[in-house]
Length: 200
Image (cartoon, rainbow, N blue to C red; front, side):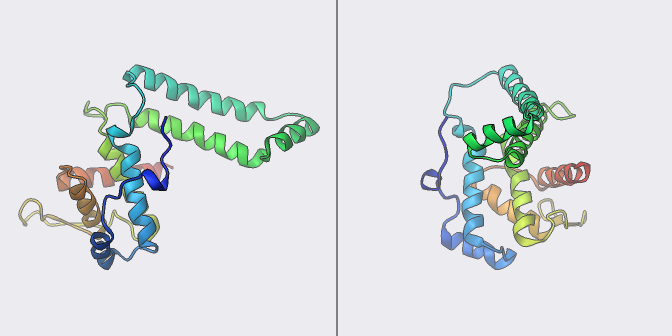
């Protein structure tokens, strides 16, 4: 599988375009955010899959295997002290950081396994929805402002009923990626991200 590096991630926003966005949102590190948006887009868009396509069943099976095997390895790392010391000294990584990596791998594989399932209404997984959720997290971490802070005015015209800085940022990214998402659809994803944050 191709590994993405800074040199092979195409920019989504030009520097001048993102300077305009920065004027409204005040990111802590705008250049890092501009690159991260493009990186997340490169990771999530369908063209990022450079390997032969797998069936949904195969993907689900592999993710389940990653989840369970990573968790099992964490358990198996509980070795006698000197055996553990010898193993980790040869690997060049202490037990703590390795356990943290494997635990995160297991958790994220499980999350992705759930995420690619059809939603409660039976709608199939849409890659752009995950991209938007990642952007919501990025927005909050880089501005300190929750993207869930938005207002609703049903009296206004459709497309102008929702207002909020986080929503405005997502609108700009979606438009630049040449995707079509209604405000209702974006707000639904914002609510989903709120529920996930609460559950965690």
